[in-house]
Length: 512
Ligand code: FAD
Ligand code: DLZ
Ligand code: SF4
Image 1 (cartoon, protein in one colour):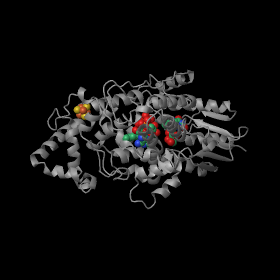
Image 2 (cartoon, helix red, strand yellow; image 1 turned 135 degrees about the horizontal axis):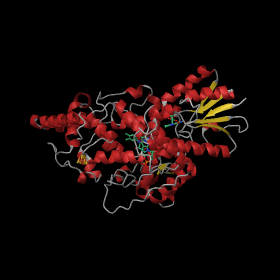
Image 3 (tube, protein in one colour; image 1 turned 45 degrees about the vertical axis):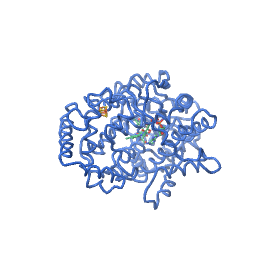
Image 4 (tube, helix red, strand yellow; image 1 turned 90 degrees about the horizontal axis):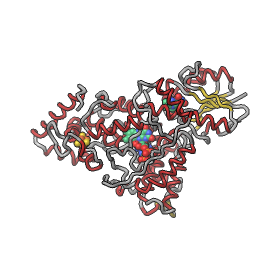
């Protein structure tokens, strides 16, 4: 009898655990494009096209390796539209002795898979996803008994365990972390290399037609389409990043420039998260560039920290804390998501640029996600449920295991301080220092109050006033709260009334 091996859309790696003992003569590999996955949040058109095209290319590669592949296309007339429905059809068709699947990236999918044994009276084997450097069990052990789950300490363990940028047991260069060198503001004259944009083939073209037809009402621009859709293309993108951008990755990691969505970032998250690239090979290539003198330590260490530190750490947090994590709301935020996140009118140039680029590219870099889009959601008190749904749908690299801890922990402080010791709240000064947005804005970043003042300025203080009861005992906020109490009642009332006026206009969708 055969084994049915299910490959999900973010498991497109030839060495995935579910394929490790696959018998090409007997076993069936199932991949399916299903409506439920594309619509449980309404994913960006480019994201759907990217995943469908990559799945189709991956299936072709498997067939070329002589595996038996059952690929269910979205427009297959018998397509039931869900993983469970497609498994049911495959069980009837192949009568497998068991179903093998690699551990999924979302709790919701795990629950569905766990239900299949009873539903189909068939053994289900869920294998660990060993593409990650840290297993769920290892993370649990690391976290057990710790009061604070600091990423920095986790990261050092990963560095040591995988012997990355380590010399004689010590961190390369004598320091674990070179973040202090990685905060340069943007400057004129930067020659940012063009990212790799491979040409579309006929498979991708067909997928684009399908997505245009079926998902017309989803957010985002479908064209131009320029993502890599095969491992070879993704490897090329990795090589190009190492050769052309890594050298400045560290210096300008936090910088934002109008009209420059890609900066010196790697744009590899799509490929890492769907399985075309492995995190370890990516980190090793960057490490090699350092040892060959092609990139400085601050850039290489910073890049490696994102991959073997942050990426692994947020996955650990997700599985440690789910399912309760999805319902955290420490600051009791209740606002619905402002329409401007979907491209509605706004005069705030920073937000307008970040949303525009998100719509065009299904991508925004970290500081845009964190300090502009995220900061605004935090300061205006948007309900975490809505913020999660937005981030999960609009970015081509978004899967819940990575999206949710970033939203709950990093931007919204919804988990009460598990990820960060204080909320990443900031006024307009930060955005002005790290971007070129403010020069083209109708608001004045230097003004603290009044109709033409940068809204981030009064929203920042209003946020602190509003959440005083919950935040004032946070030791990392004691200085700010002290400075708040030094402000006279008149000033505080000015802040509150500006914020009230602004938030009302925001609710009325008045194009603030
Ligand atoms: P680079 O800046 O080049 O970084 C290299 C790699 O490091 C990334 O490709 C990514 O794999 C990893 N990385 C960097 N920062 C993080 C982080 N905070 N968490 C996890 N991995 C990280 N990343 C996702 O992959 N998917 C998401 O859904 C996602 N949602 C986010 C939501 C919010 C609110 C925030 C603040 C961050 C989110 N991130 C997410 C993290 C980060 O913004 C993206 O990984 C990064 O912007 C991807 O672009 P890049 O490949 O050019 O990254
Ligand atoms: C995101 C996504 C989309 C849009 N479509 C599919 C699909 O049709 N088939 C599939 O196997 N996977 C898809 N995915 C990715 C899944 O949502 C992802 O594998 C799960 O959420 C687990 O992380
Ligand atoms: Fe954004 Fe304020 Fe700068 Fe305008 S002035 S771009 S709203 S930070």
